[in-house]
Image (cartoon, rainbow, N blue to C red):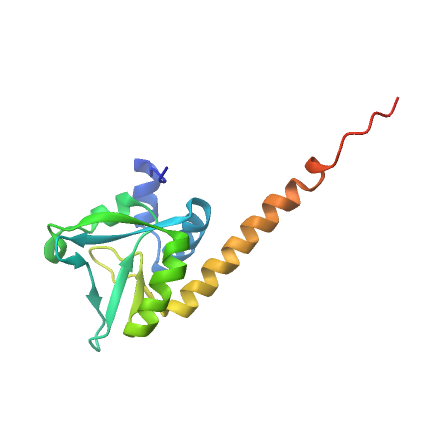
Length: 149
């Protein structure tokens, strides 16, 4: 099941700075273990930076990706990518193809441009924090019950 963004959150997040949207992106994909990009019948959508380097646009939820399917991306539609597949296949593919990531672009903003290695590191750190906080808060829950009568 994918993360469903409500209207209030959608509007509020769109007002965040690029770096704040990046942090939001990392946390949401760690929580939901999926991210989104856009594609049409010919393949995945790409952007270019000022030097011409290809950027892969990615979002934390379908609604944000869909909001960018206008202008040059009219006719594209959001597609989810499981996080484990992203880490196992996309990251090495982007390194091989010398592409960068455009994290959470908006129609009026390119988003935060990062290399695949940096994105992978930030995702891994968020996942490890998520796992340690989950297991840390449930540490005693798995101990056997001892009757103290």
